Length: 288
Image (tube, rainbow, N blue to C red; front, side, top):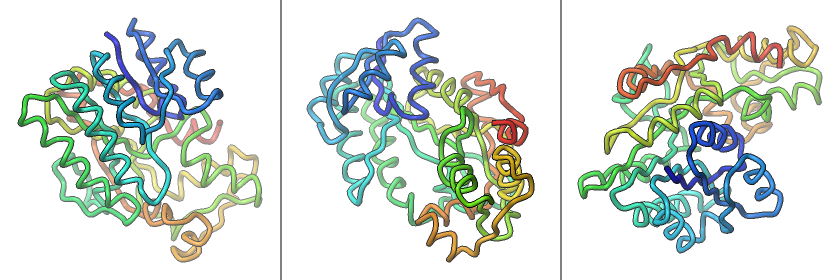
């Protein structure tokens, strides 16, 4: 199978290309720079030069593939518009072939206990734009196309991702790891390599499906901060910040970090045979 991937040189994309290649798939990956080209080529993928705003490039690359994984995200005030146009172009190119779109569980807001993909939506400002885009993507299932949405939880592993960026790196710099609020809220986590396996499986999912990419690990934010404090060699060194202080330090993502979420990935396990194997996040984070 030939798969076109956006975001292939990124944190999740690298693990996903590895998973695709390991299964014998031929991968083409969108790249914007020489550095990104070296990354994807080193992973065994063929580079496709362009950006998420290059809709003609996206359309043709999708048309030449047997399936599409859209993992990339444009950074900027026009994120919603760029993502919508990119998705439309790739769906136009893919036609009846699989198109897998990336969402995120933050759109569910605070959850009342453990919930699945059918829970009501209450997104923080940071991700509110995703809701309409995902509806547009999934609506094309009614025309005979094969859209699927994968909604990752908070991704960890390989010393990367948001936990590294907003918790470990500032912790090393300031000598203590931040924690928004009292840290009693729960996070829905997934290891980057388990998430990569879900993306591969999603290429064979029924049209119109939505899957929460979470491995049913729900530690509290404080437990994560404490684990990261051990990883940086400062066990127990945690800086509690008010939401306003966290927003000033981290930006609008602080509101999302303060959500209390327990999502289950049972649907993906049941329908796709997904089997997450990295299930001790706190130990892994403490030893990363």
